[in-house]
Image (tube, rainbow, N blue to C red):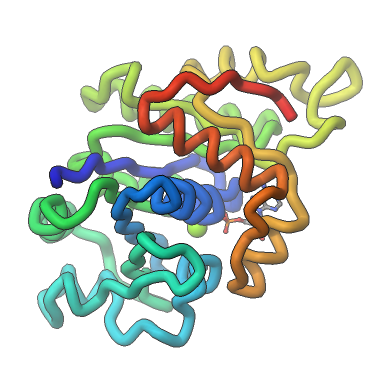
Length: 247
Ligand SMILES: Nc1ncnc2c1ncn2[C@@H]1O[C@H](COP(=O)(O)OP(=O)(O)O)[C@@H](O)[C@H]1O
Ligand SMILES: [Mg+2]
């Protein structure tokens, strides 16, 4: 194995990076891939709950990057999504440093098909460290002008840092029927694409099921619209042609 490393980022906070990271990881795992999801958002830890490993983690990514434990000791398998493993962020403190993160990923590459790096809002240490090691990036945004504007800055930064245009893609999250149209702040998906300057790879609907499963740490029902959208996103990441539908 030689894992593809994908960073998940946004600019604006709360756009659904962690939710989409777990959804993508779960759906890649459902396709038989071995997936490691590393949450880098210290203090705003949420992947442990969404993936169902809450209460099962002894060590976190900070312990690994500081050399307090081996990477393998911090990996916990999701009981909800077989094939998805998680390294949690610390509850507080710690600065993600690029060199030890790169060493961890190089060591883990042989054991996984996909490594997902769930970063924090903005372009601080988690973003910079992931930016230096990731093969691909997903910019997860909600369809509102502030998220899109901040997403543009992140997208331009990634491209300036040498990521190929084809390796940086847009995911529009929390889309509802009223997200777009003449009375909305954003007219359509094309406006999202044009504002951010990235090719679209996924549209995830606003979903009560996704929100509830994430908050409770329970499995997402396999055939709800968000799961279907997640499956399509995973398929496109695997290079398959799946038509994009807004909702
Ligand atoms: N598609 C969605 N439908 C409904 N709620 C969502 C969706 N995506 C994210 N959320 C909710 O938005 C909040 C922030 O999501 P989260 O994934 O933690 O964002 P981030 O990691 O970008 O800070 C959470 O309460 C989550 O349940
Ligand atoms: Mg998060």
